[in-house]
Image 1 (cartoon, rainbow, N blue to C red):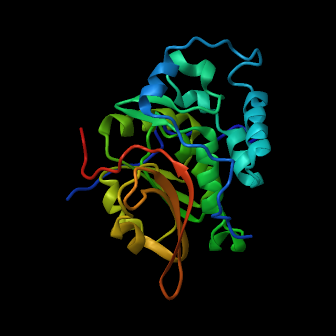
Image 2: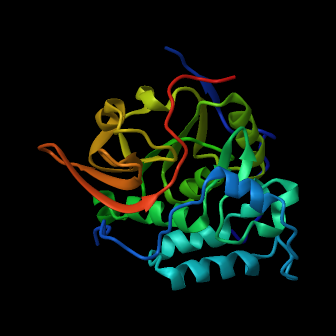
Length: 273
């Protein structure tokens, strides 16, 4: 944005707790599996050199967006969001020189920040749903797995409202701190069990998950609005691979299709302090 943002509280995000055309889901060369967490820690040990433009430069972000466009991401709104959100703010200080490389990086607590190409592809698939025809962007979005908050920041630029759930208290608090300077007033962070979604704000036009299980939780499907779309990694039946699954809810049921191979952390239930 060209104008300075209005003054707001240091932490504008809400902290809640609670207890017990169409996207193309065809195979594409744009998305490669994310490497295991062990590789991310190996990458963390490498020493890189700054690009010379400064990590807070709009040019650095735009170059990353341009590379993703050359690799196959075609939705301009996704590329513009990638170019607008400073990824280095969500990366540990020791890894900032790698913030704009297409690689996953460790963020602590056994988790990673996903590759930009993976994030961009998933959001592009999400935008390919029925709601895109109404020029409403993603509408009301539910994100399962806040992590460090980078994807939530992107979703906030493309959605009317974002509810993002994180089960790890330390990551929830970290994301809250990292997102505060961006003043994303349409973004609400929830510390809770992502497997049960967030019924108080349902139904959702869009649901996106950053962890994958053997199948999609019934709660997610129930909380998806008619005309809405869900994108999530899911373990292939009888196999060891994860694939992206796209689900569109219609008046008569659910249309489901599988896309690229991915590698996300396992989906877990409950909350972990």
